[in-house]
Amino acid sequence: MNKMDSAISQADYEYFNGAIKKHETQSSVLISNSKYLNHAGLRSLIAQEYLRRNGADMPNTAFIPEVAKILHELEDMPTVIRLFEEEKERLPEFKRWLTERKLSNFTADDVKHCKEGTLGWILHDFIANSGYNIDVFFQGMPVVNDFTFYMKERAYTHDVEHMVSGFGPNHGGEVALIVANMRAFYNYFRPELAAFFNRVPTYLLSKTMMKSGLYYPEGFKVELEAIEWGLKQGNNWKMPLMLVPWRDHIDRPIEEIREEFGVTPVIPDGYWDWTNSTSEDPREEPAASASVAAE
Image 1 (cartoon, rainbow, N blue to C red):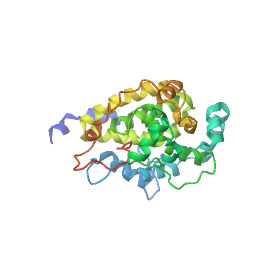
Image 2 (cartoon, rainbow, N blue to C red; image 1 turned 60 degrees about the horizontal axis):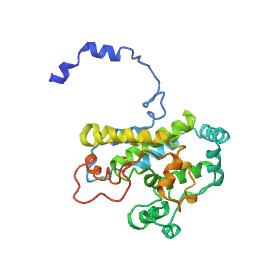
Image 3 (cartoon, rainbow, N blue to C red; image 1 turned 90 degrees about the horizontal axis):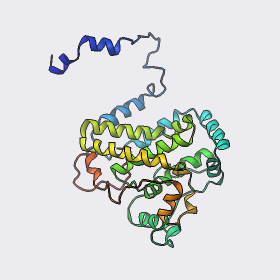
Image 4 (cartoon, rainbow, N blue to C red; image 1 turned 180 degrees about the horizontal axis):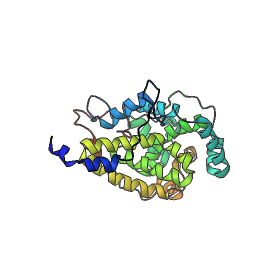
């Protein structure tokens, strides 16, 4: 028996586990009252992505599409659609956003005319020079209804939100942006729909913190600070930034946009630029240009 074994007593097991009830079943496979736990593929991915290191042999963003696909497939879609309809009646900005369906699928040509300091000017630099792809998810998916518009526009606006929030595409910025959105969703929507919007982000944040808790203590410290920044700023947003029709604002100064939509406080430029290395094993070369939102 090692020291850790001896530190946990029988009294501890009884205190924490004493209320466990054992159930018998005729099932030949693992089964529970959780549709998520019952999904063998999700169980496997969750275990791997929570417990693995962020090694140089595998990008930190690995398997996000697989997990997102499973989570979407497990949704009760009639309920989600009902919640969309109910919230459209209650929230005029949400209804307008879904009715107008203005996609933020910007190209460099769309914003090349924009003056320095405007959102469009920042977008042009990002699209033309960063190496990132603004079309980060659901590539090729047609927009045919409210739900597919939400899915597609949510992907397009991710990097726009980086620019407007000041939470850059780096480890600290990604965590802060996730948390800001979580806070804003719960401030604006009823909890049932906010939970749906936060489903995949909850996975991204939790696996990031689990891995840092196991392997990257400096990264975990960054994440705690990022959570504080995200909660502060997200609580001040007038509405979730995904609802802003960004095409209407490309010629406006970024400071003016932030003031209108309550995007404050904003961190200093470059504040977390150094943080990627705190959440991963050493790399011989810079990481590929993919969002680190889900480490």
